[in-house]
Length: 321
Image 1 (cartoon, rainbow, N blue to C red):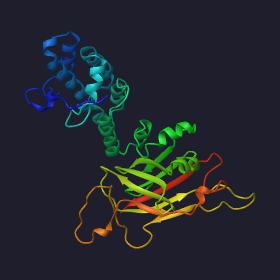
Image 2 (tube, rainbow, N blue to C red; image 1 turned 30 degrees about the vertical axis):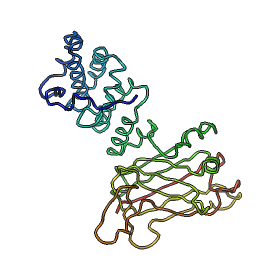
Image 3 (cartoon, helix red, strand yellow; image 1 turned 120 degrees about the horizontal axis):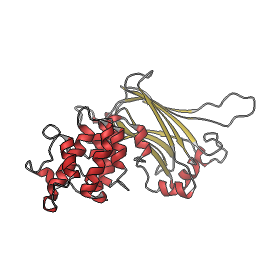
């Protein structure tokens, strides 16, 4: 469902009332008792927006009151109109779902998102922003918000491939501005040989990252790690490791493939593609991706770099300098 910002937000006169001027209980009471006529549909819409704003942003809001308020709003507008309203950026330039995530109100997000059969493109982008701002990888993965190769999703289904796994750790025992991401890419070789491009997006330290494996124009297999807009630039230092699995009985575990960044010298500034960062001095210090060439092992059916199920295990450890 695609929706445009309501004209209500363009006029101070028609702006939805705030919890600072009108109590939520009074607004819900008006909705429940039908005190807005069909000729006052704009006022009804504004009242619903005010109620939803309170749910996602009012201080000291009680989670137990979410369901009754949401139900009253749905009755006042109808479920389709309510779903459209929730996907409109009518609260400080963002959707209600964005604020539910940013303000860490999972009960509100669950109650509101349940009325949306499928997120619009604009709404999905807004939710991606919220997940990035809060480093909420769990919700990013749950809602399947990652974007990479558009052909990969139908290919995975055709291969009967279960979803890829991403686990991201940061904070705690890790250093400040450091993260560890563990990726499990299912049926990696088949997907790479068919599509020639396999990638996974994930959220860490307030940015969206993209890990890709693909064939370059000169016929070399390559892996890259990059930032996805609108992520801010970063100066990463760290490693990308691909775990080795197969080993002869009684032998030591085979070493992983380890790719280091920077290879030597001072790390450059990693910027999202199209960011247009302008630095004083030498702009050659800007990079849109960290790139490493691989050997031809993806073509080897007996390669030790996927497990018995064909899954590639990747560990990314980065510290932002």
